[in-house]
Length: 241
Length: 148
Image (cartoon, rainbow over all chains, first blue to last red; front, side, top):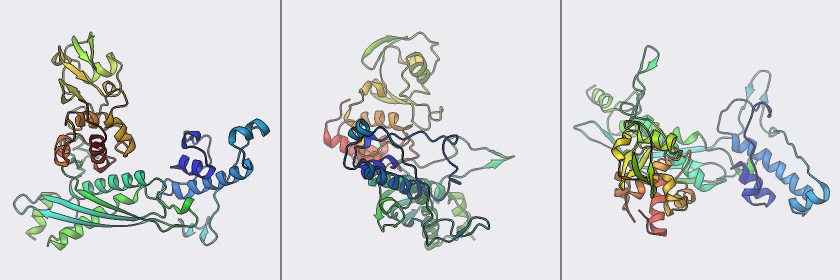
């Protein structure tokens, strides 16, 4: 994704861009790992670097420029968009400029004998500004959604004396092919002016929606569920309340 | 122990109760086969033994004497399924991918979606939500007959 932004902006093949392995000894502190903002923040800085680089190349290919003038380095720093108000000393204001938005709709079947819940179909809509690599963005959404469904229905962490006691795939159940429904993924692109090519973030977002959608669907079916995962035991007890 | 590994006769000197997984990775140096759970639940270590997918973490080396074992290396890197997984996003972190591809090889050419779902039910993927894996296998079948 980051190499693709640089390659597209420079007009060079993707293979011509190398990405350094990130090492905190070499790079400045960019704050916490939060808000799935790498594409929006780092991607935008790289886009600005590549734009300046393209200008300095002045129409020459990188190879020709190197032969004539030798190598050069472009460095850019994050620039806070002017409309964002943030006080670095009091930590008051908008910490993040923009977010992606998403919506999930899930259809379920509940077996009245076994209390098993089967998700039949799921529609998930994500507004991410711009999908830099649509195939990977869809893959991220499908994967996160499957994890969210696992959280909603199957994945029960049982702790005892500070340890997880069901730490095997035999008793900590993650969704398999047969537990994962058909997914209808929709990407909405409403460009954000401070993101690269209008992109915001998608990373963590897909895991957030499925569990609330599942709980709402179960409430719609008459289950007063107050806790996930919605295992058969929990559904059985809340149906008798 | 003698068997056929990716089309070649091999002789592996290891304890007969060595896990096939360890014999492949450590004795034969074929690290394409991945260890996930090590208890036969996740399918990451899937290889084909006489064309049947097995969890190589559960198979003692003695059991493959005289058999034909196929690992991901045996597909040569240009198999239609390998190319389709790259082209259609069937691989993300990659740990389940060798097992997924070998389980898909065992399904034969042009499997139905139901056959894919059932055939891969023993292979867990945490990244993709499986959809891109189904697309990869379906397109590989459409692009070229799947070789076994």
